[in-house]
Image (cartoon, helix red, strand yellow):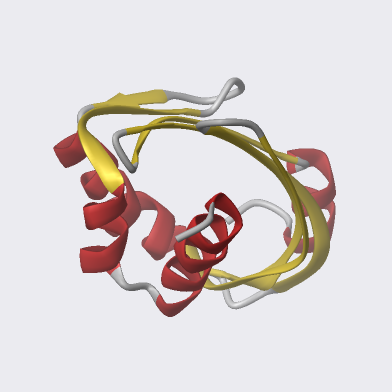
Amino acid sequence: MTLRDFAERYYDAISRRDIEYIFSLFGDNATLYFPSQHEYKGKDAIMTFFRDVFFQQFVRIEYRDLTIVQSSENIAIKAYVTGNVSNTKSFEQIRYFEFLELRDGHISRSEICIDMPALRAQVGKW
């Protein structure tokens, strides 16, 4: 599987809310980092975040117009996200960036930046 395929399957799994597949992509000691919010360390903490936080807040999310830049084991992704938050308000075309570091075919570190001011402007506080 190419790194592009890896990234596309990862975002497809998030859109489908396939927690089992997402779990399989992360290494045991992986880190998920949001520079403006929080850091989750370890596969279990990351899966708890997806199940108890992310999927609760974002009831529907789609990634569009993926631009993927890759090196040997790193992937930088720019995309636009569209979906609905838990208060049922929808959002469109929110800029999203993620930087993935891979080791042994698994995500070892993910850094995610999302345009929160634009998201809040569209959906308010949820």
